[in-house]
Structure formats: structure tokens, C-alpha cells
Length: 170
Image 1 (cartoon, rainbow, N blue to C red):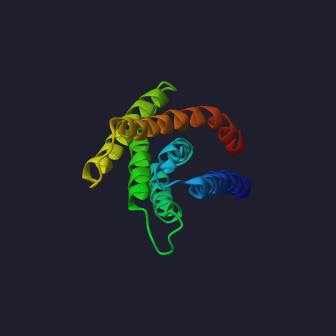
Image 2 (cartoon, one colour):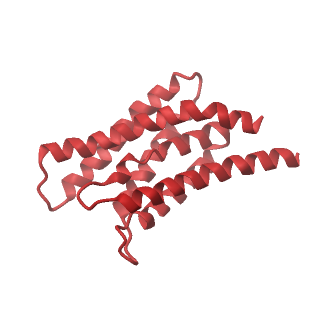
């Protein structure tokens, strides 16, 4: 029983630290004109936690990572919070968690990627529509493209790392 707890703790530690390190790295190279947090494959973490553990834990992690994103992606402004990053990351993760409610086959990951792409695109588009700035179509399509790339990379990360985590937990 204690070895199972240790294995679960190790898996959760990896699923906590690796995304936080990646988020910190992305925040260090973040430039004002491009929102690189849109590329953060954080949805893979919520998918993995949902598949390996429980939905409630995945939701808690989604909240944790969205709050972390508001702090980490603040463009190095002390005391500032980037609510756009937090909302984007929260919706991206919640979309994957709720689509994974009924996992029947590995094909489900493709469905999750498609829904995640749609949700990411809608969230990005809503941010751009409520902004006071005028954006070019190229910029809008690039931002939406980042959300779609994030969904695809998240799906690839899940398919690639799920066997690793299953072996840790077995």
C-alpha cells in the first residue's frame, strides 16, 4: 500500500514540477507582442491526471496551474497578474477534462484535441475581440494557430507519456 502511494506521489510530483518549469522558462522568453503561453501544452497534464487518477484531482490541478499562469506570465511586472493567461489555461484544461469523462478508446484523444483546439481558439478570439487594440488578420490567425498547436502538442504529449506514467503506477 505504501509503495502505491509513493508511485502516485512520484507521478504527481513529475506532473507538477515539469509543467511549472516549462511555464517559468516560457515566461522568461515571453515577448510583449506574442503570447507564448498560448503554446504551453498544459492540457496534456490535465488529460494525464484525468486518465491516471480522478476527475476532481484534474480539476484541482487545472485551478492550480491557471493561478500559477496568472503569476508566471505577468511579463516580469511585480504584483501584476496576467488574467488572460490564467483564463486561457483554465478553459483549455477544463475542456480536456470534461471531454475525457467517457474514455472508451484511444481514439478519444483525437476528439479531445479537436474540442481543445476549438475551445482554445474561441478563448483567444474572445480576448482579441474585447481588446481595445486593432489587430491584423495575420496576428489574429497566428494567435488562434498557437491555441490549435497547443491542443495538438498536448495530445501528442499524452499519447507519448501515458505509457511511461502507466508503468510508474503499475
